[in-house]
Image (cartoon, rainbow, N blue to C red; front, side):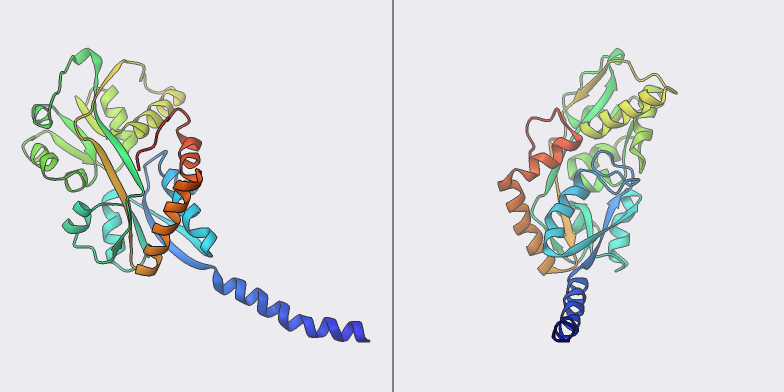
Length: 259
């Protein structure tokens, strides 16, 4: 009887422990661009950016809930109040869209290049050299990459943007556009994927031009507390070596990450 009494006394405590654990798992909804591999892999809820955010916030008791949308719509979704955090943010984007919230430290950087088929023999030296070629970029690039880029794009009547970066690669090899502008890792990911599908020959030699420099990005938070927690965890992840390991899952040949 004493054993049964002890068990009965423990049951309420166990229930309270379970309730406490459930309450601790606060959900964070985060908006990501939906066609951004290997940075975002929407079909598996994985990718560099998602893994980075999850590694930072999950140990604090948060449950990360990804929300995917076309790249340019992320800011609108954030403004609607339906999500807590939006990825791929910098001061240019925040100011242009008048976003209210708390911007994190730089969490990762894209390495954008202008890509062209080698047979074209282009010799681009500066941004303005792109004004005379048909150029397909990604959504919001004119805002995200600053004034000089926006001036080039506005002076180019053949400039376009698309939310689907796999289309950029296809359009280059189909010779529908002379130049595409995108992150090197995204280019290689979709080039390999298209080659595997076997529907389009993407074996031609390609030239790349480093006209843009690194594109640093972070996360915009509705909550200052969450932003501060993320910044602290980001420092810890970098110091522990976890940061490099996250990138190595998706870009094994990458020798150095520039945050």
